[in-house]
Length: 438
Ligand code: SF4
Ligand code: SF4
Image 1 (cartoon, protein in one colour):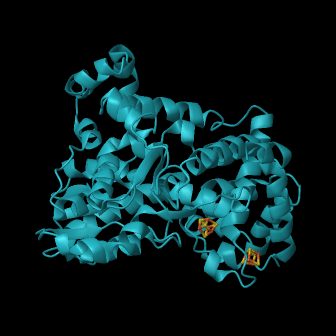
Image 2 (tube, helix red, strand yellow):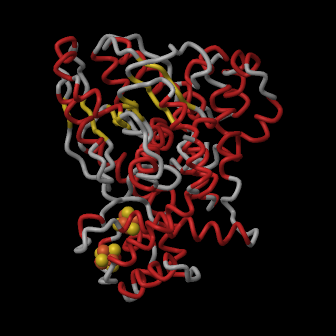
């Protein structure tokens, strides 16, 4: 299968997609009018003629240069998907914007001016530190698929890269699969990336095709019926951005959708959980928040509260989503936490790992606990709770205390504490606002 990637590079596939999309687009501007990242994040684009904004994107996709308007829109698109249902031609403007972003970043890389040109390297280093402070080498080998996997499995739990930073989610989700008696293997880590970083951050479509294609080959090697992904960025990358580029002999399904499909089998085992929950949502057209809501609603004792937040602003928190517009991110997080507290919630439930990384720090400022939804399901199933090491590290006010706290794992993983001490302040900067890189 990897031969196919060499014969039909992703650039050629994307060029073909771009031609089809731009031939259908009438430049009506409806997608511009409904776009939250334009409305909330870019006065320059909000004041421009919508038809000319999309016109610049169409020209870029047809091989033209990247105007300031096209670059700005592509780089601030939060993937909300609000444009999709408003397009009268039933084409996908979010897909057009992802191709535009690839072109913008490719042009910048050629000029040596792409500030996100080494994102994969930096991300890999951050993941190495975050993982190395929270788990043993044995656990790390297990969740990257280097140990403990069967030769074949009905299901592969595919983690992508970044959920590894929040092992509490990974290990709780695995405990749930164990409880359901699922025959599964695990694959995760930066060596098994979906390709989104190369595609959207580096502007390197060829690299994205290769790394994503290799991951599909590794998943297919388990001969699974289903691959359960966790990360919404992997969902978009495989299910939309490069959909059809490389066929795969299994079904992709999100972990939450899979659990919902099995809910009837296990909801009888739920114990009462006395919590007043505010479920943090993202729409993004993926339906994942709705599946989680249905699962949580089946837990006796749980009260799911209505509260106001901006679930239509982005498909996820984090890079490539809400992070693309810092002011929107800050406003959305404040709104989420304050309105959850005002609604009387005792627990703010995070949807994805990126949301968890951003929102868990608010525990120090507001009278509310922050937990991922998998933790609530684990609690209802009576599973032993995993410590949220990520939250523990991030809530430390003294870097040296965070390092001391993690010393056992730091030594076991051979990390350099001096380097960590030098890097952590930068990585954790802005943590009180939920704006840190870590
Ligand atoms: S996906 Fe959302 S943010 Fe991106 S262009 Fe469409 S409406 Fe705008
Ligand atoms: S709404 Fe659809 S047809 Fe109209 S400008 Fe946007 S992509 Fe083109």
